[in-house]
Image (cartoon, rainbow, N blue to C red; front, side, top):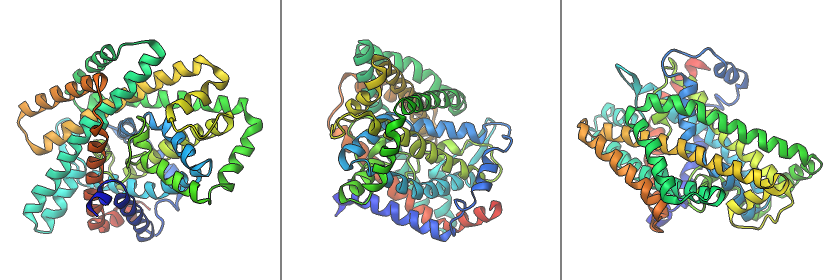
Length: 434
């Protein structure tokens, strides 16, 4: 039973259950007010770390190789109909991401450089207000330890393995050289803090996302005669047993599949309690308005980028049964553009992976800050993070997949429990805006 809970089955059930609960508890808000959502997203940005910058920092941690190859694995498992179920799953993910980000802004802390916070802080407040002092210390501390563990595994070693592999394939760059370059690019910037990381990711993420969108749309224009059949195949095959299973697998594991084969994760981290660390830095006045940016985050990650990748793959005419997600994606994109597409994808993997490394280094440092105020621990964490980058390029232990699966399952189960306990706060803040 414990193994089932911590290897995907229980987490999947809990995610869907809590997502459905919040959808009905909030009576469809804010999703049933699209006009209000759009108005919030186009409002003038506040001073400090704007809601958009905080969102791009969070997207740096969720966008990655999965948006390029994760969807390919879903199609290989369940056929084109798997994409339909990815869309359905994303719908429930939006409300979970909205709720956890809302709470992170409501419970954020302020200091001379701006705001900081995250899931650990609203967990602490949740149990303190209920008079559970022991849980108020222990519960968020365990969550922070899980987050630290995941920063070294999924947030670093697995990302670097994907980056080094693609760089070696496209540019014949030795893995160790690639790792050293990443250490020089990541550690000094991470040491400066979240503000500097946010400033860089606010440029990297939109540029590379736009590049991927432009390339995908260009390929779809070239293959426009197959586009109608591709869309029909998604809906016509959506209700087969294989497509249903494949779609859920693709959605719930695509964050791991963005680095190859990792299992048991959300493509956009909804419900895991990781992205609230980034969104807590926002200068947004109303927590619910920052939560809307979480909905936007899921839309960009799963609905936009994953859907475009899926359509490119389906219209390419390549063998969809190829279980190697990276190989299938490369074949689909290069079938028309040739080697140029392969080079672009290698660059995209590097940039997305670099942004993810920066983001997770920031998440790890925030966890260290929560656990201790001693400055020596920050330096130790950065040294260990640099070491994990080198290890990720030199060798990737097989057990690292299981380590990350265990960490993300722990994060998710802890976070969803507190989301449910704080449901009244979510509703209260939602009604203030909607």
